[in-house]
Image (cartoon, rainbow, N blue to C red; front, side, top):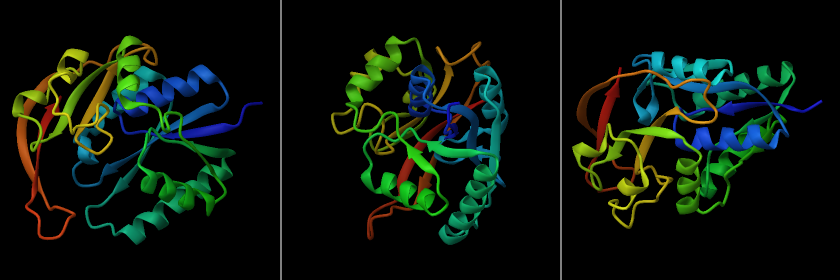
Length: 230
């Protein structure tokens, strides 16, 4: 019997390709797609994706979706406690592994592993340390389709959001932007490909620019373009 696993799902390309690799390898039984959604906004963090589209996406993939709602006022400590409780519940259901789409962010990987080790759950990273330029080329070659839903305005214009990610579009990206957006330069919504039973249906909504505080002290705010998918 294969060990059971839940996938920390973001709705984007990295999650989709990591899930594809897991399904191809058949080492684990992927039981659940787990996502955190804003309690007030009903959207996924920096992706800005509506909850209803997330639900449609999971149905098209055919793996049960579970959502943890986070209030905007949730502290980091409260978040860790909430996630620890959720992970313990996963273990009680016989799920002892968790997968992520991370590629090369060492601090984030270490944080995930430390938190999961506390409750005895294995952390799995199917895309870890793979070349991001090669990864995105393989992703597109496999027939995945994904929309850019958020993009850092320091690197991208309004026209970038709402566009399909293609090799041709990637060639226009600034050289300092990672091809997979692993440093948070852009975020995507994957709506079709080999993990889907059918394409997710949606329409392009309005585009807006939002400002966020810069984590680096004494630096200006960071602007992001968002495209609403309806």
